[in-house]
Amino acid sequence: MRVILGLVRACHPGPTAAVTVLTTALAVASGRDAAGCALVAAAVLTGQLSVGWCNDAVDAGRDRTAGRADKPIVGGAVSVRAVRIAAITALVLCAPLSFASGPAAGAVHLTGVAAAWAYDLGLKATVLSWIPYAVGFGSLPAFVTLGLPGQPWPAWWAVLAGALLGCGAHLANVLPDISDDLATGVRGWPQRLGPGRVRALAPLPLLLATGLLVLAPPGPPAAGGWAALAAACALALAGLSLGRRSPRAPFAAAIAVAALDVVLLLARGTGITAS
Image 1 (cartoon, rainbow, N blue to C red):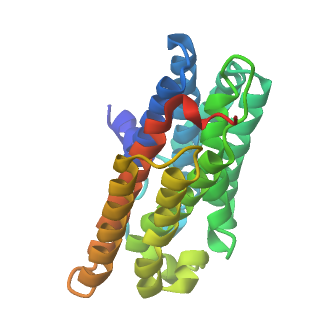
Image 2 (image 1 turned 180 degrees about the vertical axis):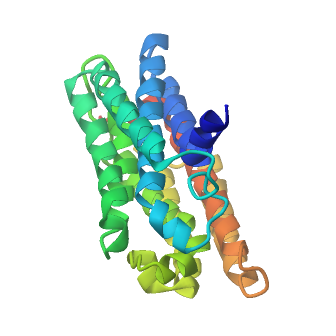
């Protein structure tokens, strides 16, 4: 039981659940049938599990150096070997589950998973650390639509909005750990920018995603879209203004803007396919 709980903690359960639920909800909104939605959920879940476990297995040495007792490997709840085996097993399961939605959909999803593994295995420590997040998040709308009858491609703005969401998620995710990362030699894009610049920059790709989701689809924006864009701008400004008094305010603002973007993307439903 201790090993199982350790594996659950090592998979980064919050992001894993969030990405799985978001993509499954997008599949439902886009018109995938029940079986198709179940396949999307299973493929994304196994892919995210593999990425989370790979991350903790690769970072075990750095986490020990940084004294990260909250990490299950460092705390002794589970071994590096067990986490590594779990990561490989999940990756092996992810491949057939991805291709069950079709060859094009499977290839796109596995490209996103491969990008995330590349991040874990070394790109996270380079100035190109943002690319796996952009590729991974940008691939999700394509994975959903390419599994529909006729295998339609997603609209360009849905892919670009997903990529921008990924860049914003990268900045927000790394922000709390920048000091520990620098101490252990990880110098990715956010670490090179530094905490102050990351706090200021994190909402920007998310605001760009909001603008795309409101303004880029065909037809005039609805009143709800304008309201969401105004709310996103207000949240970003509030995060920046409160950042000096509360270091977590910009992070919270970025998460709130990302949540608005997710709602806007889901609201497009079947409209995320290319016309």
